[in-house]
Length: 533
Image (cartoon, rainbow, N blue to C red):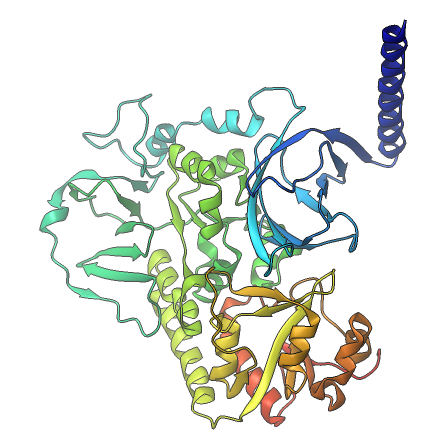
């Protein structure tokens, strides 16, 4: 009897849950919004905390979001697909509403937990459930176009190339890229004729072999550029990726690389991007996407293989986040699309980041434009670095949703640019085992460090900036006691600063002007008023 009652109650509960879900879908669907629940499993971390399952998925206007609720209140932010999300429910179990591209593939996320003595970013992998086990359409479409077919459309079949239907080499190329060849020249017999003289960059090198160029990217691989009309040398090592230039249908999935490519005069060689037009702060890129010269081909972790293959992609330029999505890189290379991982963000010297513009000049055949731009920026930066040290202290930070203070570490490129511009960054050499460039600190600790700072700069690229010191004080009353706030020396970065990789010299000039108060003609900084405008 008791068993029958329990079974009946269980059926009623399931029916009510189903009716509630259907009501939610129906009511939202009438407004073009659909919500449903998806079971998940997780990998990563210690297992003490996790995201509650099921997860609510909402689809609206062609976009999909997931509401992630943790079993712990100690997560202050998450990074998903390169975008940072702050906790929506401080004091309660941490909650984040994040954009999701697909439920057909696992999602790699980073969660920052403050449960330990110091904040730690931990990587997790979310596996979605509740979907039919069928092949994603974009994968199937891509596999229907094998790399060999594409190569045959653009170039005659070379002797010794893979037979039709065979699997391409790990580093096989597309229409103008392959893993090797049977040209009359021998790679081993090529003699170096010079090297690119780099001033600051340490993460790449370029060696000249006559008309050939060999690009080495630190911790990744070598790329041999074969000029148009020349043969691929024989016996090219298997680990060297061969690129036949010109490369004029590239997919640039690294947002920081796009500005470098643009200023190198090579934007016309880019056909695909990993952000929609409205998400770009680089005007030339936004304009090119609005006119259709560049098309959206999916984010780095979920590229649209059908678009990429349809556009004849000859190179994918990724940032190091692709190392968290090895299956994506493997898939691109399986389809015959070479992948180049750019390491500019790992350069120790800030101007080393900018010097990557010279690599893109070589890669896309615009060396003259790239070198000229680099030299102009070097002169501007050198002038700032030659100015006397002001001796003034500077704090650079933003306030997270749960009231923590996110600061740059001493080795970060922003911290170094402050020093190069005549300022003194408030945080000096600090022992730290991880390689992250930022960290969260308690307000009380930041107060001790920055209360007497001469200048404070609010990072407006994450979570929006501030318009007044009143707004800053509203986030924590202790800011009202800061010397820089009392003296009106508070600045905020513009929201395009992160994407403008080539703007380092202008930013250094902004920093110098903020320190000396000689000029208010800022590019990436704006002075914050005392009260709301």
